[in-house]
Image (cartoon, rainbow, N blue to C red; front, side):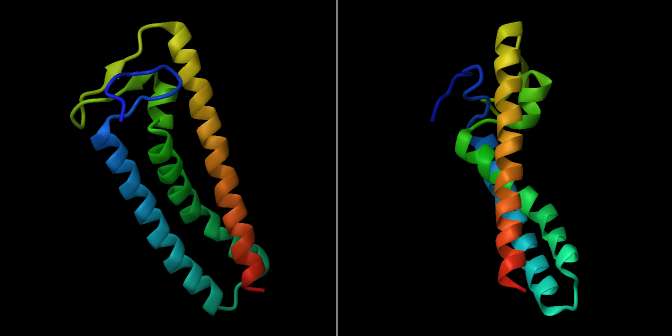
Amino acid sequence: MSTEYIPGTCNLGKSEVRRRQIVALIGAAFSISSGATLASSDVSTIGKFSIILPLMVFAIGFVQSRKKFCLAYGFAGTFNLGKMGEISKVQNPIDRAADRKTALIILLQSAALALVLAIAFVLATR
């Protein structure tokens, strides 16, 4: 794992990546719980798409942990490679722009993953 900030590539240290993995697990647990409830109740097809909210939590945590990049830090122009709470500012405007671009890509990838999983869930529970 990288121990240095790399613009547009790495803005998280080991403890921060671990936090994103936990978020993904929590999102997965909520998704499974919500999915079980939605599948066993008389909810319309459109209503079943509400599964996208916990799936989005899962997807954001998953994608961030895999890429070792926090989309919130990327949008805020910050990074953390040390202890939890030791956030540093990105000084170079070009680096901040690269981080914002990566953050946007992660947000779009997460939304796409959540949407694909939601569609699969809705189709499987018809």
